[in-house]
Length: 382
Image 1 (tube, rainbow, N blue to C red):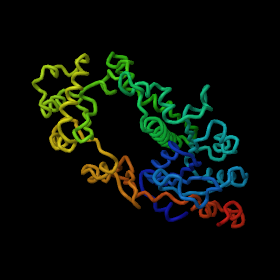
Image 2 (cartoon, rainbow, N blue to C red; image 1 turned 60 degrees about the horizontal axis):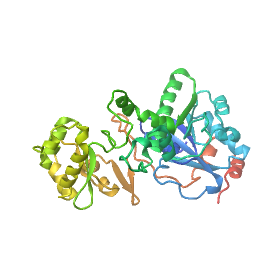
Image 3 (tube, rainbow, N blue to C red; image 1 turned 60 degrees about the vertical axis):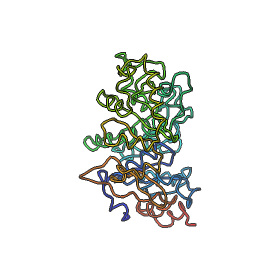
Image 4 (cartoon, one colour; image 1 turned 180 degrees about the vertical axis):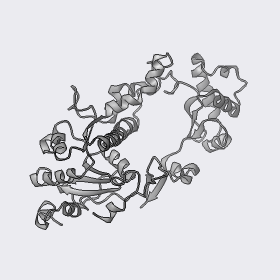
């Protein structure tokens, strides 16, 4: 084993994961596992060997091997890795892994304790299973996108956090670790069917509960967390920047009104008066527009108000709270997030940079016990 492998630290040290090259949520799950000490071996296309990593952040902390999965000998090499692995990640459309000879049936036959993680948009079954899509499509069909945005406006085009990352990558990482725990106690592996549609629906739990008790309405822009409430909104400042207000609880809302000088205005007498919300938002917009973002940040600094400035990425990386906790770090001029969550007993090591594609092919194939001639045939050196 390489020193990079044997010296890993973190809560998942000793766990081996195979990641069959993909994009988006599957590799993000792999990053989360690698950040916590798992040995993740990413399998990429032989034609891409020697190229820079496809993603300099999400592909960090891996070993990379480049193989032609249309070659039966390369498939057999992957199955050899399967025999000593705890989990596998693949993000193909349903049926593709089976056609390659790397489907769950053959992999679990080789290693009955294996957890086989499948990352898709719509899931392995159903009428949409084989349709293509992206984050925006998956959150659209769950109702999440339809609940976002202001009344009378198009639903916003959000970042790919809800579907790809939260509903996909994090869901898969959770599913894999849960199933690996079960495998360690039972000796039985299994398939984890992680679909971004399912993960997005799970994230709607709070909204659906509020809807049941009459505290959420299907009309957009009239609810507590969709921009309809004055106490949970963003406001433009004099310099064209923004402040974020999240003063849901009455005590925080009282503080906001005090700092804005609105405590005595009758309009703000009842926080939950939905009929008055549009006028409250308009009035607060007028007040916030009288000072710059940083002036308002100073006015709210240290107060229990749930009001914060809206930062861009570079500003966020240099914000005192984030620098104190090293929430971000910079390497080779690139801002990256530090491993999360933090484990006090088994802290994660600093992530290794994303490797060049195929950088570890010879190393890994040699570890499998393949002879030098076979290794050279499967992965000829440039």
